[in-house]
Image (cartoon, rainbow, N blue to C red; front, side, top):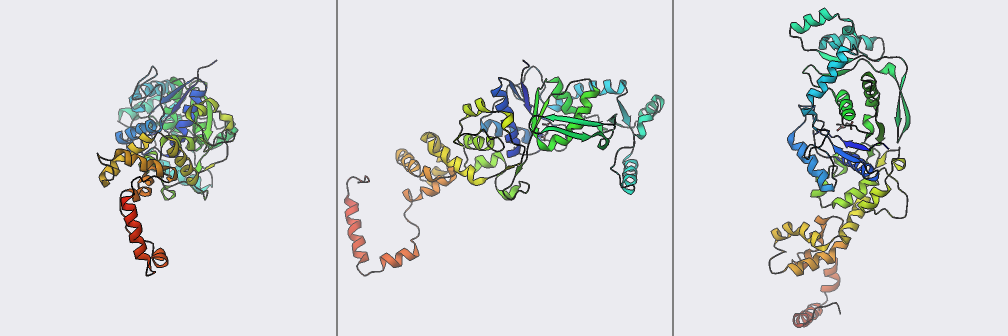
Length: 421
Ligand code: GLU
């Protein structure tokens, strides 16, 4: 049986979004379920938008979630390097091969010429497709341009006839009309590969067996299949995971609350709750309960049970899960998570750790996030700051109320044991 090798391939251009985290998780679950390998690869060919900080943040976010990988930029592996920016020689080698075989060609068209082609297409109410102007240049013409210092892009020759079928493990067979493709660019004028080329070279040379990724890449897949065909490589299996929508079914964005893993951490979510929640966002394993420990998720995960329909983000459900995990976690761990803030407030001191822990333990079953715990525990550490208006009128305004309270106060002051009884 073939070895399962899957990868998570984020572009380090921002934070680890929950969509990305879920893609990583599904890959991880699939690898662990099938006894395969999970690989982390950084797709940092978008030089202008990629940053070291973003790469470090993504790795930190994945680790915080509890995901581990078998090969990656930080730990190496036999199929490395695992950063696209360190693989330029590999891409160049295959670009060269395609150029020599006449399956790709240099294109020297200027932005103005391309704009003219676009305008022409618009006028004819047709889809814009590159007019293949440079595909018929002679070798002598190419040499002349290159000698003059021109910096061409490289385009792949695409046969516009017929259809490309993407066999997808989640979506079934998805057909694309090749007429919609044109001779697309596989290397930019600075020599760097484009995403659709680099991803194919990487997935093939890293012997990736299954590409599990976001639905937004489904429309790139026909182009990638053209690259596989040109290089005479057989493609991996594909599985495109549906989008995550906001409750109103619009695109999930900042206004719907936390959307990055770092934000979840900072707002007091536990990683196991986020992981459990994300796993069920699109995966329906069936069964009684929504609570799945890691090991059980990995042993039950299957792409057959991943839904084709978009998943809808439900903060209430995440809060409920987080509350559950807070209530069953080791008390020491929860105390540690709130202790910095508690010390800052002066509620946790060297002389009261047991009292502090007991207060945390008492309120945690009502907290949805760890940050809520201190708010709920306030009355153990601060005298009342305000009294409820209505209550004051109802109970404190009778003439004898004050005398009674004083009497209770005197008794409580001398009460020896302060247990519930
Ligand atoms: N780098 C791409 C992204 O972050 C992923 C590409 C892929 O998985 O093929 O969206």
